[in-house]
Image (cartoon, rainbow, N blue to C red):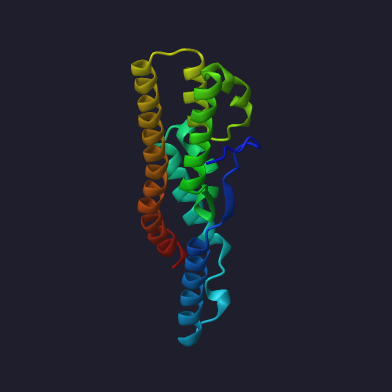
Length: 179
């Protein structure tokens, strides 16, 4: 197997068709049902109701969530609509190429490749290896990174879970106020 010295490929970013398709289907179902029942599109286009539900939901989430987590959740919202994927085969080939280079030229030779490594986890692991970190310490550090990333992802998911819990309640308040 020949090693590629051109550098790793960046993960591809493409729209998540399932999410976009689900949103189109949900919107078509709601609007279709409304029109079949004789309703008008203007019946659901009420800015005041939107303000009450969105403002109330976002406000309630802000009260129950630390600012740092809120900001991270806002940044992560794009991940719902975009799929960031790198094939496992690509990742395996990249790791094998670094292992081969380290075996042939020493682990220190990987230092020049660090700026070209797109995955921050792999970049940190190789950087620590180049610095001569003990294998057991390296493993502990990388497992800690995985754990922290997992906790961060859970915190972001809880922001949207909370919003999903508050929105119906605030929607009912908006409906009562609209009557």
